[in-house]
Image (tube, rainbow, N blue to C red; front, side):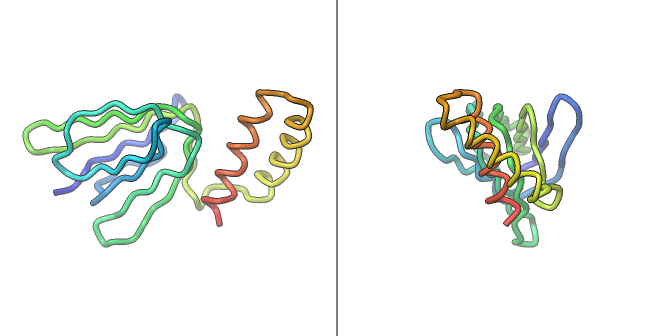
Length: 130
């Protein structure tokens, strides 16, 4: 049994497809979704989103928070990942993420709360892109 995943932002549908398993980081911890999962709504953290494809390989994306909504109807499990921003690992510009990280770390040292979120976003991209 698979999970139909829709990873979307306000601007685009980043990725859609069937997966064996979806692993997300919620604000209260990690959650794994398999086919047949009970309905669920989770607030997401700035973190990697891991999707195990039907061939067993993993597709990884990064999401800047948002929500994961899981529903099951007539044997079909659907997971909608709604994020302000999301990128697949192979779309991440690592050099740009490192530059954003350095800039945000400098601002965060001055107790800039927004900079702390930017640090988390840049770090998540660097981890996901490898």
